[in-house]
Image (tube, rainbow, N blue to C red; front, top):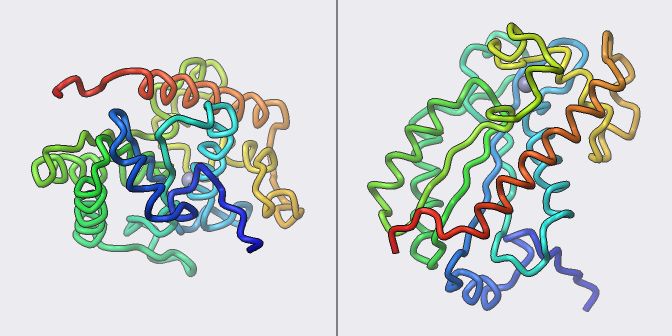
Length: 231
Ligand SMILES: [Zn+2]
């Protein structure tokens, strides 16, 4: 058999591996969320999804291989009603996203997973994921749910970016434009994004390092802790 499993990816494992990982004391699933919405003429629709997927994949390269943390496939299509006027934007309703998180989360909890990290790359759905996490917690009290935003709480970000850019959710901003060429994704390496007007090479590199370091430390701390300490 030529099938080569990718150990960090939930969907590449077999059911017996999931069964045994889920039983571990600190078993955790990380589920990235992005969007498919207009990002100006210079960035692809899936910019937010590509970023969150790439940063988390990079973080996994630094994490020890034996921790009970698995990544679900990134949810590319998100909640983008404000961009519906642009061709290419696809937006799911808030009810559908909330239900999806509850259904998937509920099943992960039934499997025995203790914690679920919802990592979000799209500024426009922060409150929606927070609400979904609260509902999921009441629905599946045995599993801790941690919703977070890729660009939030990152030390050093305010030194690299302007306050307005951060407050505006970084949508199609200098930060996103500069980061795109630094991704490991095949798409960014293919040269499809030839027109990254205003992109700043060193800014992109610094942003990528900052994001990877931040999420590596946070996830590592989480995996070494007994959070949420209620067992
Ligand atoms: Zn964006």
